[in-house]
Image (tube, rainbow, N blue to C red; front, top):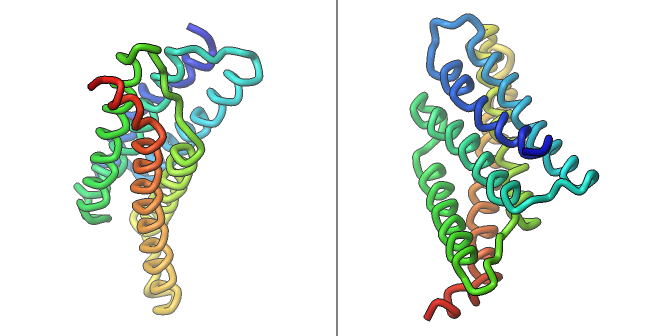
Length: 197
């Protein structure tokens, strides 16, 4: 296993620790620790792709594992957000539904006559990047509020409203890109399903 794939696997290994810090309030500064872990995992998402391209370490296994690592990390974070009441379940449903559809397309492509291994496209990568930024934003806000006990409304009602508005806009943007990238995958690889008939 090359270095790029090891970084991808490391991202998956970090997920249980991230979830534990998110959901166990008894751990001091648990949200800060979750933020650090998520940030490290997000950096590995950039590094594994960069290393694979720069040092010619691109493999079919890496193309398959990298999107899975992203899905596990992002979906775990969003499920934790729902559990904690930080976001609506509809966002997670949209994202998970999209991931099932894209995973189905990838599976159909691998089983097609030309054995195509579909790597993440531009919109898929953009969706992942924006989603990770949104998750980091949530974690920063919650770290300040819960770990450092700073109430945004006490600072200023307008500042509190700005935080709420920004969070909503980011979440809607994430959901929009999720849907658009899913449609793009389905359209781009529609021939895979035609060849199965």
